[in-house]
Length: 158
Image (cartoon, rainbow, N blue to C red; front, side, top):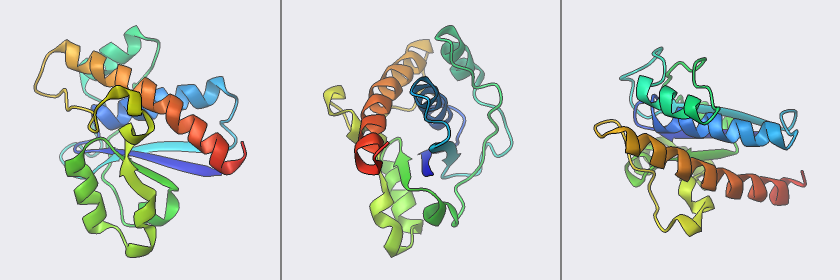
């Protein structure tokens, strides 16, 4: 089983969107038996709360459901449990690396590293903006999900 964890600050916008988009890509490829997907936040602001209503609406308009999501914070055991720990931006990457035991540091990277064609390193936080920010997050997550799935297939023989 390959395990993937998507991480943003509060776990109510970007990381649950990435989780749901990637889970859909995994399902379309029939790889649910081989790839586990989850998300978390580096902060505890929204533990137990649903995804942001704007993120849910934008995702649902594209046939992606965030309804079952409940926010959680990254736990120390996540570093040993997940093979890929993918930060949405450089700030969250730094926060993850600061907490990560040295032997697991190679598992932590930026999600958009899997979408070099996006021309950017960070998935921007849409929380304080308008609906277009949530659309951009969905687009970036779709692009990076394609690259991530290709990398997992290649690296794990799936």
